[in-house]
Amino acid sequence: MDDPARRAALDTLRAVRADDAYANLVLPKLLRERRVTGRDAALATELAYGTARALGLIDEILAACVDRPLTKVEPVLLDALRLGAYQLLRTRIPAHAAVASTVDLVRHDLGPRVTGFANAVLRKVSELDEAGWLDRVAPDPAEDPLGSLAIRTAHPRWIARAFADALGSTGDELAAALRADDDRPAVHLTARPGEVSADELAAMTGGDVAPYSPYGVRLEAGAGDPGDIEAIRERLAHVQDEGSQLCALALTRPEVDGTDSRWLDLCAGPGGKAALLGALAATDGGTLDAIEQAPHRARLVEQSTAGLPVTVHVADGRDPDLPGGYDRVLVDAPCTGLGALRRRPEARWRRRPEDVGDLTRLQRELLTSALSLVRPGGVVAYVVCSPHLPETEGVVADVVRKTGVTLLDAREAFPGVPDLGEGPYVQLWPHRHGTDAMFCALLRR
Ligand SMILES: C[S@@+](CC[C@H](N)C(=O)[O-])C[C@H]1O[C@@H](n2cnc3c(N)ncnc32)[C@H](O)[C@@H]1O
Image (cartoon, rainbow, N blue to C red; front, side, top):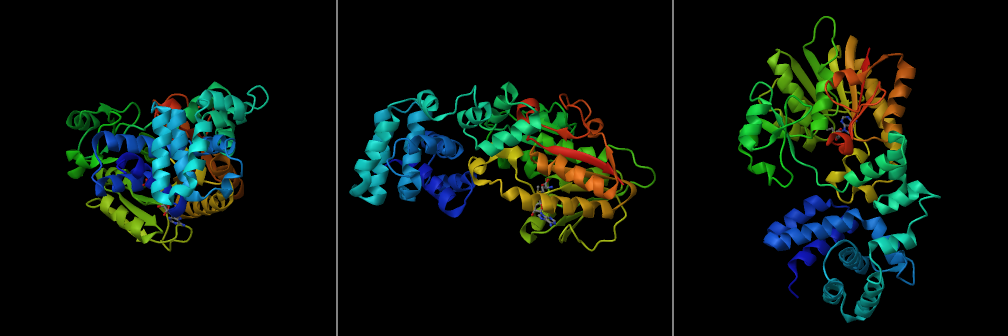
């Protein structure tokens, strides 16, 4: 059997299911190890990421074609059926090739005993195209607009609900927001303040000056491996979504009376925002303390901030044993990551609504800690890469109520950025701003 593209795609799906691996880490490694390149590599990528993204939709359709619950199908066989169904539903690969190649993989991995079953299931899938299947398995949009959109855009219902609640829409804008999760995000770079301007970096990289961040450059989609960019190797720039740049910058925007030289990043790993804040602090003679709980991520912060006035501490941000009195504190809290689903094909199916309770507790504790570490009159930015209301407005409103601090209008800290709604919070969106769906609140003690 010689089908390196489908082999790599299937092995990736298996690692994602069985080992909780990330498809976008496993697949490039497999392709490198097996020397799969060119069209085969492109096909493997399309099949692995596409199947991982559409998993819940594919399973609904497979469930309609299998005479027992999918939980009773051998997992290794189910991976192959998913890969085959994806090709039938969402690619131009001819049906006979999609079926035959999948049956070959099944025969190779499991022997002849289940090839007949795989063949029969996939032939059934091939009887309708995706639109035909959606008419069969999706709820009626008139009765259940949210459920219909969720399955049509291959999202779990709870995530579609979370987006709808944040947008206040179950109509066209929700559809646009959900569809944006399937787009390949462009690579954004941050031009290191004090080293190079965005104009210079754009000229060096062939990218475009970003629309909103004064330090941002956007590269063309598919611009290749950022590791090959000379400006990054020379530490003049780093890869960072423009939304992340804007949220880090927002911390620095509100005026503070008195000193403004001691800044703190309470959740710093892997160090993207710490690198930008550290470079800005350096231009004004200030310093940044960067806290990170996970030692290996703290090392990444050290690497990304080398040469800057940044001190990295391995500690729990809820009780970091530092003297306090900071002028500005960033809380870029651990979160569901629902705002960055574009970046991880399998993430939408792996995250569970049950994860949210533990995360919001940690987020509240970290924000409360930040408010005790900032001096009176100082500013705290609370940031998450998620639009999910319990971990955005819910956390902030709760902490504001308990501590009595002042909520600032964060929109003023995002000059020139359109479509920011009513405030006082800022929620960015891929479909509106071309950034991750970052949330930012600003508080003054
Ligand atoms: C959203 S990420 C931060 C991203 C980072 N600010 C950047 O721009 O690169 C959250 C980080 O918080 C760390 N973390 C989780 N719990 C923590 C805690 N109790 N104290 C400090 N850091 C924590 C995680 O390990 C993770 O690296």
